[in-house]
Length: 167
Image (cartoon, rainbow, N blue to C red):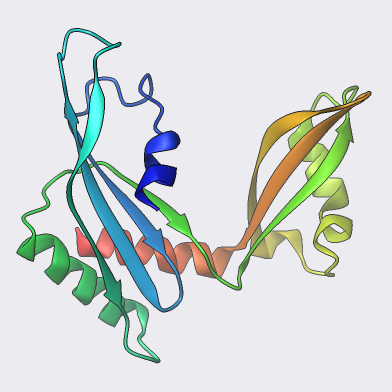
């Protein structure tokens, strides 16, 4: 898992940031890694990130958001994690990732997804209950290959509450 996180680090986006917290949330656990930037701070080519602390918290069955928040907060305090920058990923039944093709002639992919989301999800669900993001991952002839991730807003809100509530 650590290698997957390191492979996705965008050094330009993190310019000037010395520490960042990576949080991977599931319904039953949370994995945490705090990474620290090392190397010459004046050379963008010599910067690298190394893990300062990492661990996993397994939540008791039936834990609510407040209980999860307290466990995460306790872990962060115990391990003296003080960075104010964090990135989180969510794995839950409320998250679905789909890969599809979109004609290259489509100029507004957000609108295209809004028009086709029920077909992509294969579920009739009001768009107001969902949030989505996408990434163009390749090309196939005259189409772009798109990976879209949909998450139920309540799942997203719960995940955000756990992280922000923990400090």
